[in-house]
Length: 428
Ligand SMILES: C[S@@+](CC[C@H](N)C(=O)[O-])C[C@H]1O[C@@H](n2cnc3c(N)ncnc32)[C@H](O)[C@@H]1O
Image (tube, rainbow, N blue to C red; front, side, top):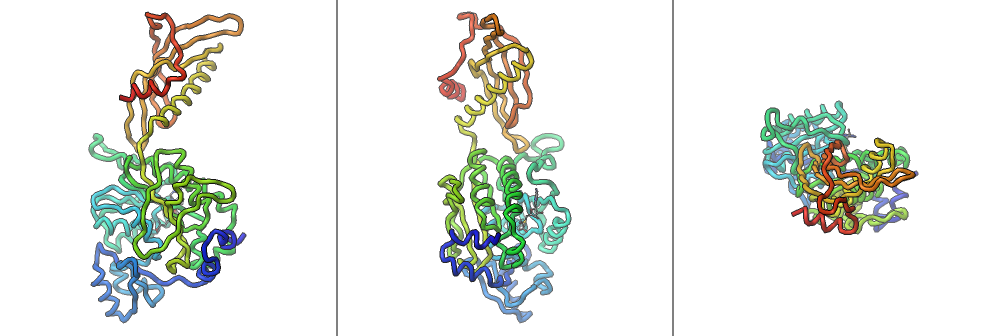
């Protein structure tokens, strides 16, 4: 299947789009402000008699009239870094600040990580992670050439990224549990890179694309878990496919506490809004606030960028978690006691939530009224158990101790319709 034919019907000015996809990409370098200034870098290019043009919307980007700038001395000394114009959008959208803690989950060979480090004035911490060790050595070499000192590199599968290397050795204040901002520049089917790699057009398959979407989803989910509530997650790809873009973001909106932020690209850079439907599938309206870039807009490659804010859990989210737990408890009690036991949540006595290891932990102390029946005889209310749940996303541990039934009524009334009111009351 031709990825350009597949996407063309949703692109405005289809013929300009098709023409642009056939043109070669300009050669662009980013001035590395950790080691140089725009003025110094330009002077060095002048000294080498290399013609360049400054990109209208970003003075740090220079279009060279020379391909393969890697053998120029300002490049060798880390004043310049070859980076596609459109790919600088990811770090600009992430907007990392000096002194913050930043993670890039899929970082090699490092264009966006090194761009983030420059935006941070080389202060704070940026962690560049990738699961491909070979590609990580390119990231390391780039970081050394560009003179970064605030970079740590990890080699993990971003789908289950462990924060352990950054947790305190002796006590919690030694380390940290979450990042201020996380960039997911996801592995993708790369149909947007067709101007750089024309072979993509023949090699692209829907089967391959479908196999990546699950990975993209898991990486984005983990990124949200690793971000401090109130922090920012940017999801970007160099793909045109809504399956890899809007559908992936739509999925996390329903699964995790986050929302799409309205973000404006720099003046002079043209984008169009994300799709809210594709092949009969509807996405949340807020997907309109994501950005698609087609090659004919700014003479670049294709790109997608979504900016998400991580929020705190809402009370309704927790309520639905409790309903799930209730179902779990019913089943496990039936299994262990080998008799039909029906139980209902009677009250919530205490709830504590905290964030460690990038996960939301909840400890809840429930009183659980039980009435039991065997097939032939009803035995009525048989007691009350105090149950403490401690769980990270899912129930991990179940501990209980017996307690006396309510002395006033002698029974345990199941709580049903007023669940929400009781939650509000206990939520303080
Ligand atoms: C689009 S490239 C990243 C480009 C990079 N952000 C840059 O600007 O230079 C996607 C990267 O994801 C990495 N990757 C693929 N699956 C991964 C996973 N499960 N965990 C971490 N990295 C992964 C690939 O090795 C590849 O380097």
